[in-house]
Length: 365
Image 1 (cartoon, one colour):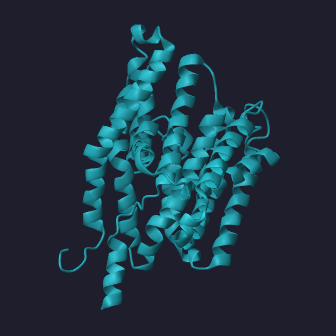
Image 2: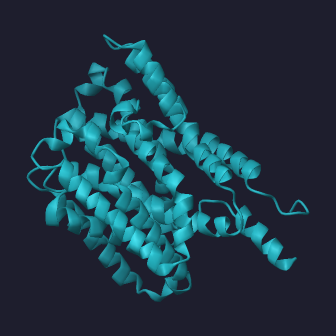
Image 3: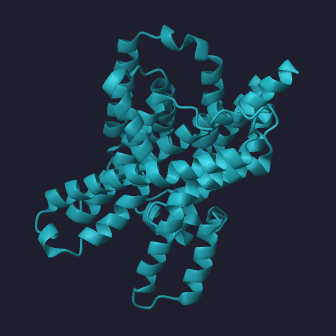
């Protein structure tokens, strides 16, 4: 009976086990993507080392967080369909209104195809567009990554079966990294290939090593939880900041393709994994911790909302006359709105989903 109660407790723990260092890194990554887009749209300056690198970090963080949050629940009997419903209610509350807004925006463009928009709307609302060329079929800027993420959600329960076997999970992660490296190097052989072949490149194979490499990291970190305070804080921070600087500097190659292939691409892949590893051990007390949690809470909204808010502000000549102010206003509004939606819309919906799809303890406590 005691073991049964422990199993129920393991399932009922909220799915997103909070690691404050992950919040900080997730927030910085979302901010970097927003800065990358806005500087490109406003100033025609392309800091692709901020954009691509940050998306890679998202996938590693996702894999590690999923293992830390769900492995024990699967071991305790969480059903796959309940897991998928929980993930659906994590993404849908914010993404569905953005899909609706994007549909209106695209419908107003000259030459819009009603049939094309309807088919894309169905794919986006059901989160199945990851199986249908997400780089082309997604309706909102940056949302292609959600389609790929949902493929990983579908594969994750199978990966859990390997997690209890150290060698099996390691070989699977290495195999996924190999597939990713071969796919990326095959797709991006010449300058300009990333844009010209975006639909062909933007597939789950281009990111599968990041996600399942992150899953394996989550396995290692879960085993190491008891030793979290054994790392010297100064050393962890110095290593973490050095890895960020290395990522930004080395990614600044002559072309975006050059930063993703060959030895440089392989080194940066390892750097992404190390960034997430050391983020786990960051000590963030007091205000710094609260700021990091706020950044993490705003990250999903900031990632999806900044293109929509840009479309609103960029039509105002008074705002466009001051590009730096436009950049700051869009970032500020995106962050503020993200926090509001997280507090009063997304979080309540997630709690409803957890109460509905996670089994309760007997006794009603």
